[in-house]
Amino acid sequence: MENNKFKYKIITIPNVLSFARIALIPLFIWFYSIKNEIVPALVVLALSALTDVVDGFIARRYGMVSNVGRILDPAADKLTQLVVMTCLCFKFHQMIIPLALLVVKEIANGIIGLIMMHKNRDALDSKWHGKLTTVVIYLTTVIHLIWSDLPLYVSYILIGICIFMMILSFILYTVRNVKIIKGEEDA
Image (cartoon, rainbow, N blue to C red; front, side, top):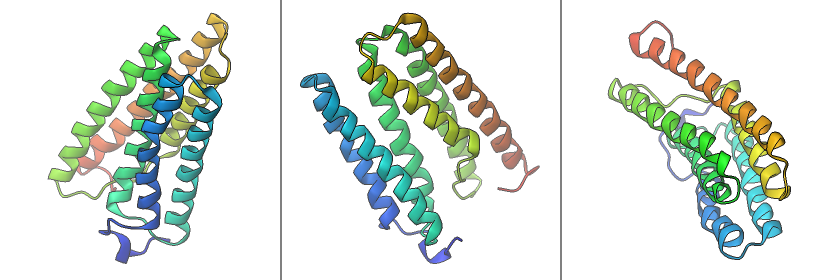
């Protein structure tokens, strides 16, 4: 249920929750990288994930879906993922591969998003594969955070699954977005 009165609003409950997720990022960095305290860092990450679920629920349940929220929510996800992966790279050097892929994927998606905005398209909702990729990224990073002496082969398996989902989602979003830009598919 979408309510058009929220479409162009910036300050909504879901958007405030997304802003809060972004504000939690420096706290995660502080606990994980500076204080080397894993439990508080995990609590911050869990709080971030909880606000992500709650903001999505409120937006859909109460029709508070806005164009800003359609951009802000995934941006908060990606910023959190980038920071967590970057922090993990110092201990798990192999994390650089999904981190680099995430950066390339998000730059490409950003360019496509700008093209769509230029063609006066509204921001688009995320799809199942994007949500699943987010879950896989969070599971991969949380397991690396919790399991300090993670065997290398387990790390590579998790990272491989993560990379597979990132590539699959990127391809599926790109195909959808190109079709929309060409006018072959409705948003």
